[in-house]
Image: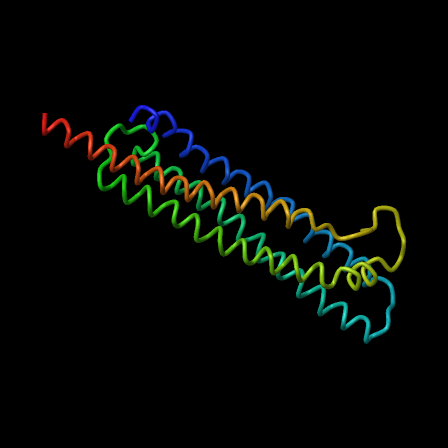
Length: 198
């Protein structure tokens, strides 16, 4: 029981830190979205073939919308993790020696919600990454028409990779918190039964 209690705060606070990591990664997403928008406006100042223009607009719009939706999802996920973390603190899951049914419900439902939300963000992130990498040459060619200092040389995929890592960490922490809650609850229940039987 002492070993379980030692890791109690660490696992609950790991949820908070993984939420912070997701929030920081969402800022990297914003950079790619800004670069796309900025380069698109810059390219619009110069005349291009109408066919090329419509193709570029469709691709940029599609990739921008996917990046924007994942970015919004990441920010919402980070905020949800903060709320869930506060809920776990209010329920006392981080320092309670005896776990009650309310701790069991909160310790399973809150991380399960974070896991589900992270899974949706994970799938959306992979979709946005494939959309960007599938159209990278087209985007780079059409968005970098004039070579000017500060012009976008290539669209980065590292925000997508870092997002994948941060979301995987969040999912692992969520599963660990669920497992920890179950272990702690049943250990608390068995120690209560031992005291009654003695």
